[in-house]
Amino acid sequence: DIVMTQSPDSLAVSLGERATINCKSSQSVLYNSNNKDYLAWYQQKPGQPPKLLISWASTRESGVPDRFSGSGSGTDFALTISSLQAEDVAVYYCQQYHSTPFTFGPGTKVDIK
Amino acid sequence: QVQLQESGPGLVKPSETLSLTCTVSGGSLWSYYWSWIRQPPGKGLEWIGYIFYSGSTNYNPSLRSRVTISVDTSKNQFSLKLSSVTAADTAVYYCARSPRGGVGFDYWGQGPLVTVSS
Image (cartoon, rainbow over all chains, first blue to last red; front, side):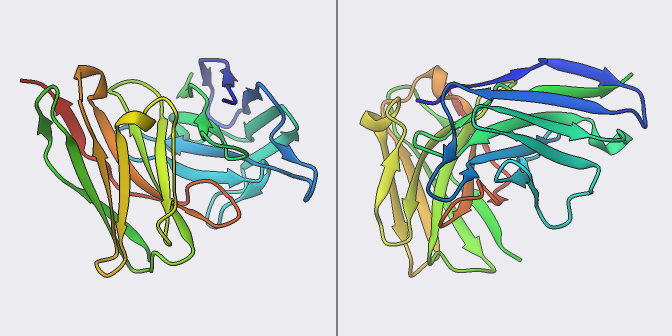
């Protein structure tokens, strides 16, 4: 299984400031055949299902604000919220879909400082 | 707009079989992978397995011996059966869609809490 880890476990950021979440996979999730990283980011608010924010490590889903961006390749990835808004308070998960079993990171809780 | 809705008992007795159905509306099952994912209260997400619209399946090895996922294309539904449940299987159970070729899980159901208790 590919093990996903995230850091930090939680972070508190002032409104308008930048928040960065890191995600690491135990093996590469890059497919050389198409040069794509099979890595997604989700946002989960209390009592709601996860919402897909970013796929292919850096492609924002339709309707996702451009303050959310994904970066990285291979085994090291990051999700950045460039200017934190109140509605961004949530738990964020990374997930690999390179190989089964699909696995998620443990989550990072983002709060307002 | 695609919508997924889980249905089934919210309480299951230990050693019995948990059964849930996901009804897909606003779209077809065709050409997508349909997964079950669970989340114990206050914890992270665990992928249980998927079924392709054609009926082929792939299960998480950690649950493979107890899981069956099936599809009914005539009803636009797919189902989960998890046998021999224990308290450790108490979780919110989500159904979710992933397109062929990747991008992760783009549509999710709301997810009912299923409690295993006598």
